[in-house]
Image (cartoon, rainbow over all chains, first blue to last red):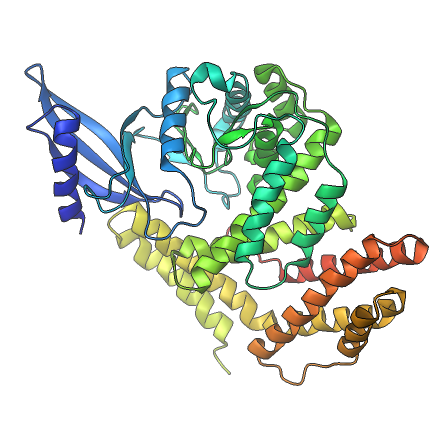
Length: 341
Length: 148
């Protein structure tokens, strides 16, 4: 199967990169989440008489996706933040036509010789915990800083209304639960009612929200430098506190919520984000967005469970998310809203 | 039964992790197989506790309906709560317990929303009781991380 895919990819890329002698080799599938099939490969060709070898990534739509996401959004986000100098891979080509590889896809630079932290690893960063933690929260602040119009992303989905971005996002994820729940979810429903009864203050500004900024979605190298922020497929316009709260969520805290993302202490993490973004993480607003983050998690896991149970996408990650992560976030929300024991 | 099902699943997951995954050709198949072994460990946990947590959930919800139905003004909902409070799990098959659990959870959502909309100390105490049921259920259903 990968041999055929290699040939088709080669046929597509040769004219795109103006390299008629281009050869695709070493194509291999790698882990990349449930919403895209991800492959690494090498492209070899001559440019100005000199041999070029590029390490590239193919991200192709799967037959069925966990959460319907727009590959154009992801591709454009990579481009905009790469240009800003953030650690983001350079996008190479986007193809929405089905003819080339049967499904839409895009190609981007591969960031090589890096690791990704597993969400279940007790200590994913080892000796680089401090250094990675500082960068992790600082980069998130830098994502929140630019005006979306200034980086060409002002037409992204979401809302530009600071007063209603909370209700816009809540409605989005409530709809996912309405459509995908296979059984009644009393904790999710109680959380939705609580979030509606206790709205947060208006957003300080509208930013590009990454949408899934967390452990497992960035690459770091052997020196402890963050080299790539990945998985921008849920990027949208909204309250930057949405991203901060998602990154602070206990599911990514490696068993210690006082050190979110498995890195530095929570207070320092928030202070670094505030300095980098120029924004304030006001307590009440952040608390609302943290509750929302766990509810959004539930919505995603409920979808994963259904995809798996109905046989549309039986990747093991969907069973894992729909069981382990769902149970985890039910516990987080029950303790948060019902009073911790 | 010896060996127990959870032991078989646990040992098989361990053999996958140590004996099979290192032989696989790429990081995708290694990662996917590691996840499959984690799922086997979850199944091992669920084998031991599956019936117990469902029976406990269902019993908690029935007793809560029995205690709180009188607070509900909606006669139809009250009648459904009374009926559910008097019901029982007649089979310990997981599928039968899940079917009852889904029915009871649906009623719990209605009761919870109803009490939230009502004034008074009794409604607040009722809400508190429902949260205790939800917290106990969420705690029971939590899975141990394969990483410990």
